[in-house]
Length: 203
Image (spheres, rainbow, N blue to C red):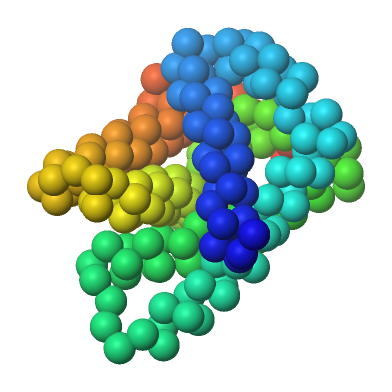
């Protein structure tokens, strides 16, 4: 099995986790308690030691193999728009992964508190954190969606009509944009007031 095949397989595993994670965040619309209940149900699966290690390995491999693919593509004489979209969205998503996962693990182990709704909400609610983390989370979600859209288009373009492939990719991008805006709206207190517990004011 070559590097590209493993990159694809680990990407599918990450996509399944990411969709569940984004669904969990979107369900905060119905309240913090609803978000917590869904999160705890999902954690029964992804907090299993084997699954958690598998996810970390998959994320790490995605970053490594993604860098290898970027180096390869940068050497090509010309790239299509879709290839450029796939390349640069992958770079942004890799940056998001490299910062986000260590931060979550560090908060859990060093500060020993739950990385729940308040963990994410605090940094998009309060200054000066929000000036970095609002665009950071937005670009992280969008990079994931753009990468999925570009990869999907590349796969289906040889099977279906090019116009249909373009429309499907645009649908994925538009849906991702709506999800990103929706989640940020909720976590920034747009739907209901949010009071951050004192124990989360650690930095």
